[in-house]
Length: 213
Image (cartoon, rainbow, N blue to C red):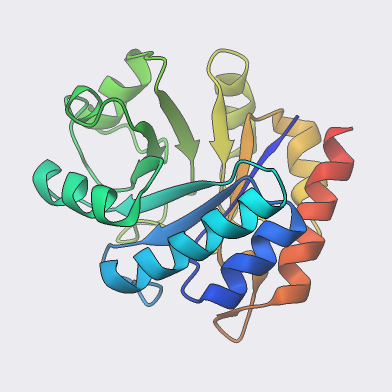
């Protein structure tokens, strides 16, 4: 079983397409980004996702994406939007894992050899998943650059992780077979001209599912 996350969703229609396509997680970005969404708008999308998932008798997790934010604000937004998980995509200290329990915590790492990243790699907590993204200086994600699959595959043998970074409907099957991740995460890879593309969302989920069989 492969978990599929469609990240950077900003509209109800795109969120519902992801649910209908079979995505397991939908990412809502609250960090500075062209994909940023306001909490009140995210709450509306979250409610629609809950209804659609219930109608299909499926579990779809809502993940809030934050970069170097404080725990109080993160928890406030998580409560308002009914989030299931928190993705930390900045330079957050490993202490955030305990501070954000019992939420699922997804911590982005880029193999940049930073001290805070080494701390996250050394910790192994049940409610924490690592997300491997590409190392792009000055970027906290969404750059569309392919991550280091060799190092990701090595880590995936020891820890359940999500693979992100430059994934598309065309390469996600190869990525899954090579890395063997717990899940895959996509944002720019299912966009056309910077906007989520319904057809690409469906194609990405279908390709991931086929590769995992």
